[in-house]
Length: 265
View 1 (tube, one colour):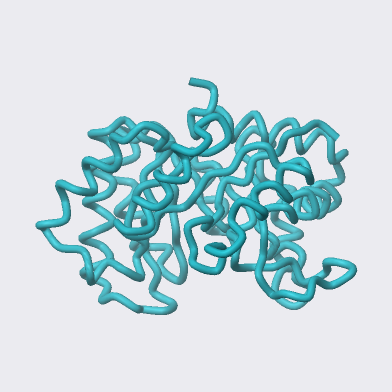
View 2 (spheres, rainbow, N blue to C red):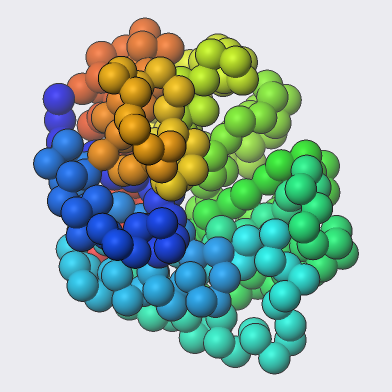
């Protein structure tokens, strides 16, 4: 297998990793995950992600942004700080930003306001965008479409949507991130069918750890906490569904991620 792999979506600043973060990273590296992108979802988690990047800038990148769940907590007075964070060394993308009408932890108008703001800041900073969408496809694509001509690139993080959503994303020029959801025999069958439709040069892989532990890991881990060391398992599942060699998918997804998040700068 061609290594190292790149985990493009890892919540390494999550408090579940506070007691063993270095060990989690070491285990991932030993498993063949050489680079990791740490997700920022609030101002606080973005600052924490940047601090981790500074510890090993050759291995890590971070995203800087506000998850739609937290949109209601983000106010005009916070804009200068988010702008500053997006310009920090080691930031590979703006986000995690987008819309989530499934949980509705923030009102739709707040989500849309903060999504538009982050797209504006991404354009200003010259960053690609790390995107989240759940049950908000029409509003999401309408807002994103207003900015696409000016945005450098975008990736649909943790894609679990339907065929028409994938078609729309690909038509908009987005890349697509696939998680261990593809390993879930209860909910992931449609994704197993759709993943073969993603062009190889638009495909990336991610764990979304500590969330979305692959259900088919054997032996089953004692903990339900997902970790980046399980990324090769996701790679194998993606390759199997696509009918391609794991080495082919590894080489392509690594190349795509290194270029997208600026590891090669």
